[in-house]
Amino acid sequence: MNRLDGKVAFLSGAARGIGAETARLMVRAGAKVAIGDVLDDRGRETVRALEAEGAALYLHLDVTREEEWTAAIAGTVRHFGRLDILVNNAGIFLGKGVEEATLAEWHRLSAINLTGVFLGTKLALPALKESGKASAHGSAIVNLASIAGLVGSQLDPLYSMTKGGVTTFTKATALEFARKGYRVRVNSIHPGVIETDMGAQTFAARAHNLGTNDVEAARRLSLVAHPIGRLGRAEDIAKGIVFLASDDAGFMTGAGLVVDGGYTAQ
Image (tube, rainbow, N blue to C red):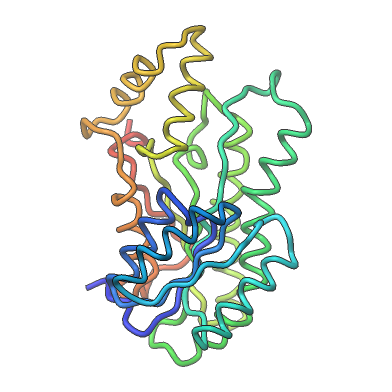
């Protein structure tokens, strides 16, 4: 189940956190993995750890730059011979309200969270179309959205705006590619609050918005919002991504997989 034998995956923003954990599980599932990130030292360190278990490659990638996406995808195909899976994982969290956020901060947020997904999809598509022709269930794109793309975020309405865009872009591209006869499935995953660097940013933002420096109290408030009784771990989301990328999800496209400990069920 969830095997990726013989498949090649490219993951953006995967030097650490959910992306790095996903790369690790993909290698264990039999895939060859390329990681693109701006954190070069951390990315190379992640790849060195992955190479102990399978084939991995690091490529520098600023997801807001078209030429870097072109080079990263070309480098992946040149090194591994094909591309079967794209994971648009790169993203940032702002943690400011509409009144506090500057236009420059919005431009950076939307460039990474929205433009990065558009460019990754567009520039990986030729390779994904080609590999999809020979696959029983086609190739796969998995977009990292968020519960903030399904319900409003009190902490960061602009983040919600970008992740809502990723959510509907996923559905729209799934329909477009199906209409055109491309064998490319597109799905999104929607994490709750996860114990990663970005998760820690949400605790700090919540504490700031409450007028306190008590980050641990803010963490406890986040914990209470997850009925399952704990916050998420990177592995929880990585397992969902591996599933969506695998042939086990061969009848899924345009769907959103919610992995949030019950947060949005309330």
